[in-house]
Image (cartoon, rainbow, N blue to C red):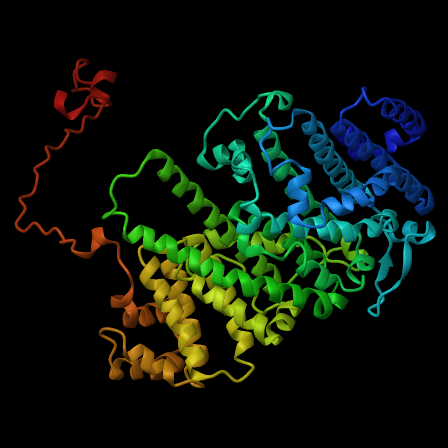
Length: 607
């Protein structure tokens, strides 16, 4: 139904009243529809309603859908329930065994159902409601509330007046869901429900590449598993609701009073307690949409404070987690045999760390890459457009080698320049990008290499202390030690090392000292490189090969190749291969037995 209304809106629009009446009839009977079916039908109505191109009528339908949701969501009962993690744990039944009070379990089910109903319906409304794509139609139908200083129109979403009142409790719920993971709160959870905080079986099987996800009917699942699914779904839906608000509500949402502080105190708080399978939703769903949708006028007031808080936390966390992976790899040979469950958990943890790191690096790419803004729903409303060029550019970092056959931006984006003007945020981003070059993940290393060149070109426009320049350059050399066995990473790192050396050497002579500290790099050879390369202007390939000779002995090699002996066989006698006689099939002297098809295709052994 939703797909039909989305793809064939003009065909469904004449039947809107009939569909609306039927939906109302079905919704009036609680036994007719499940909660998910009600939300789906509401989405279908909103999609058809978008075709009316009438702000008042669209807003009226949203008001009708949201009215019962707002009453429940803003009620004292729900407000008190989500106010603190202790209250939330108690009201959804996590602080006592499921068999202790059988009659009370219905109350907990009702509480969980009310929260899910409010969040899922709100997310459906924000996701589906939109303004017309044609600026002239939007202007004539009341979807424009003003213009930005740049002259771009400010679009108003019909759902905004009905979503803004529920945001305070949404911020509270996000803060509570994060705070639940603190050791103090988890200690109050009944031991029976401890497993409900774990990753769901379907998610775990997906990571491990196992088939056969559970097809058991939800009603037949144990109570603990129901609560586990509820916590997972409510967290993911809350993240998607934030993401849809960023993308759909536009300029009016980003200019709300105190938005940056509310975000930092809700969805971006208590991150140090979250496991990676929860944190990845904040990075991939919430933050990426936030960066891509934030209007230019709100970069300084909203985006910079939020990103400063997030990166200040993420960089130490990633450094710590990759240190654990390296330590685990170094001690794996000395470790005794582990159980299958321990090995499986290591695989899952490793996958999640790599996934979170990759998505965080893509987020930094969205900050630094030049955006190609196209006309669209979000951009016209003062927000950002989902930048597909950035996504494609970052994906190219996983393939291709060196500097051949790739297109990449030559300058940092305007947003990137503003980001780097903030000293604290700049330090976190630069530290993360250059540290990522020595993390044992080739895809992350490639992304870091591409971003480092954009960053360093901007950094050279301001004074840098010699110690900072040394740290940046040695970080690339460390990456060569870690990734020297990978041809693609090795070529990219050598190229970036050469770029950094050429860019920074004259202004910071300390880089020459770093080069001379490498094995077999001498002062005369390096001086010859300084004099010959600018004068002869060789090709990039020759210049890279000349530079590679200085750092060749520093490039890491796998253990299997370190002591490899080259095989040399001297005085090997030549193998005499008998020549196949050539037969002229046109020669009359050749007998019929020698001129047949069998002889033409005979092997040498048969001759």
